[in-house]
Image (cartoon, rainbow, N blue to C red; front, side, top):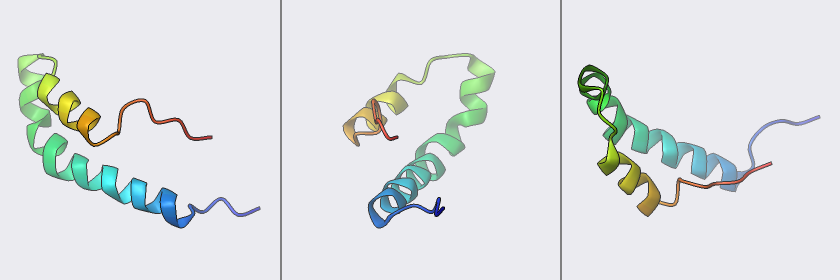
Length: 56
């Protein structure tokens, strides 16, 4: 059984990983220290279509 990603799934995976590297990782320590909800990051994720994704 092949569990590798197809081309579309791999593109999505890379896109999300790039977003996390670019937007989330640099702010993670500050978010943790302040204990604040990162609404701006969630807005950006929503604009990119990353919220509510359903994959089997």
